[in-house]
Image (cartoon, rainbow, N blue to C red; front, side):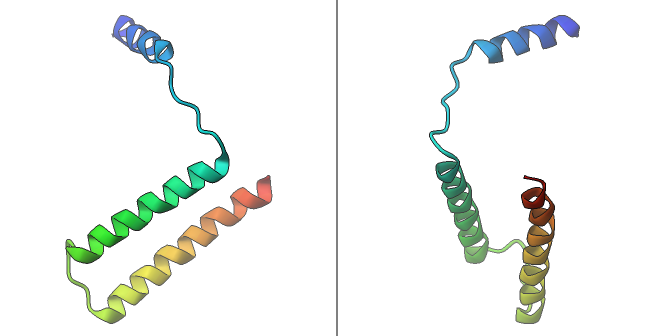
Amino acid sequence: MLNELTSITALLESIAWPTIISGRLATFILLLFFVILAALEFQSPKRKLPKKGLRLSYRTNFSLFIFNSTPLTLKQ
């Protein structure tokens, strides 16, 4: 088992991974990815929610995102 992990680690270290040019580019790509996923979910939702439930879900998710992001920005 340890030999397998060592060989996988060596393989991953030998790959020349592309480096991200800037943090802004990474942020843009991440936000674009979430917009695409949100659009796909909007087109064919897994479960239909009433408008009130959908609004509450978005508000909860946004609040949790802000709540989780605040300590990270304060730490820097």
